[in-house]
Length: 105
Image (cartoon, rainbow, N blue to C red; front, side, top):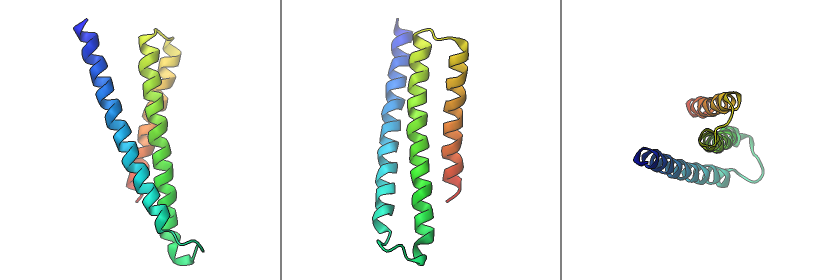
């Protein structure tokens, strides 16, 4: 039984870290949105592009967190191999999307 508790504590720890990173990303996205001028002048194209990239990055982070949580619960509940494989693929794809969007600054 202690093995299960250790894994559960690790899951909760990483879930809390993910939520904190999401909060930080949302604050950064909101800060960039506030810097955008209301008229949409041409000088703000770079800032608007960064705002869109941050939005996509935030969405990918949230999606990967949801998929990883679903993967943990599906594994504990004894889901089929196909479902687990699909959730693993989606989780890795979400993390890769976050990394690619982070490199495109």
